[in-house]
Length: 183
Image (cartoon, rainbow, N blue to C red; front, side, top):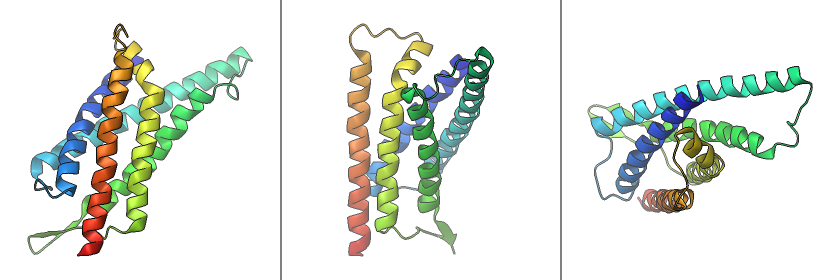
């Protein structure tokens, strides 16, 4: 089950990277957003995330049950275990708010976006931070589950690329906010 979870996480990350680049370019006004392909990829990513969450809940429950049966609980001592779960939960909340912010609506054939004020900007920045924390905590288990050795410091390379891309995403949200309040 851990391998399936790792595959769904890896595929989610791949679709997320496409979503991030396309969305950042769209928010910056460099490409047209809201295409059907973008929408389909986003929905597919959300479905993979849902599978990842369901498997994660099952694995967490199994861990807690096994710990209780053994009569040994390291729950308080295992900060990384809880950081992974809490950052994932926070990410889910921020993703829901992200979807609601950018869902928009179609009025007489015109796609209208929802307001994008300070609150929405703060939510997007917090989503980026929660995602970065979640990735930092989970990249090593993901790499191990997929059988990828860390011969040349691949973990560090992956995290650098993701950090730069997440910084670009955060910058795109700020640019979008500045463009929104100017209008």
